[in-house]
Length: 447
Image 1 (cartoon, rainbow, N blue to C red):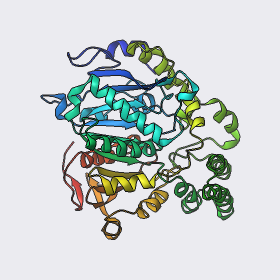
Image 2: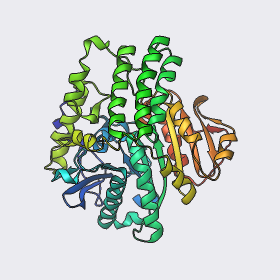
Image 3: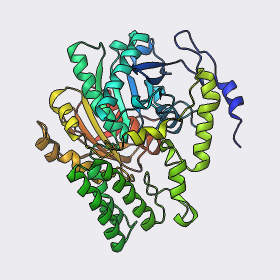
Image 4: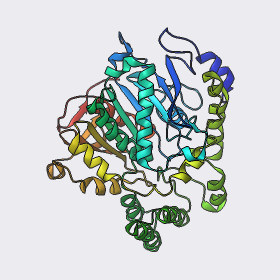
């Protein structure tokens, strides 16, 4: 039986020190808005680490960017994946806050608690999103200058990776130029929408090889995907986005309602589900949640969380518009941005993918990674792939070359932090470490 949210909030919410403000749940927190442009306001929410340290600033800062575009970091990323409390307000065993300071940003503007005062303020390009995020960090450092020297890492999921890659590049350049004082050290691209067409064109073979469609189904899905590819090659980006959506509908029909985010998820048959009505009425924030789960999460954000943080804006009220204004940009690749990160910067660049993810399948990710043009591309491709192990269980595999890594994550779909938190913890340890070894990974902890 679920405990009433208000009662649970009253029990969990208290002040544990003098650094952070009284937020939602236990632990030290800070949050605020940054006006990144006229009529464009971005919201951030910081959780100080709960690790036993002499100073919070002895631990790295991890920034979390959700996908969508229009998915909320402060709601989905926080309560469904990696924050200190889950959506039922139970403590999460594998919360990132145990080992790191974690900063959730509702991005782009219009997402979650972030908002615009004018339609002209919505972002329409990935570059504008990246500029807004850099401006957001300027505002964050202005309020909490102690974090300027703290090693900082951008962590992302799905479309968050597309946004995060360019954010990292622009931020690095500003950091080098001295226009922002900070200590950005790396970026993790989790199941990221870096090369959309590589994902779409591998849907059909992935579904065929996992037994989710037969040969006839493969042909139908592939034919739909070819329409996406044709529009991409012609530069008809908005039409490519529409054909992408149509291809998803073909997949739902041929699989009788597969879960795009984890193909092993138990789903009701399509005939029991009105998807046209579902997509029309449901925010892009919660496409992988059922109606009840989405309702519960949104009630949490617009109920006790909103009250505790003293926020006036209605969470998620503009999120669906965010996607619409980016429809022209949605299918455009940012592989050139990843190449720039590898060729121009010394940042750690990590790519990881859950093996059961369909929407950004591992095969598609491997395709764009192996096509990257960077100084050590051939060396990386010819290097050995190694397993990483925890308590005698293979959690996944990785390939390493200098500051670049790719991880294949076992028993995980699109949401790796939620599906395989043990593997995710190893990835974060590697990301925040200066050690770059390609040896076999074996955890010896007895936790």
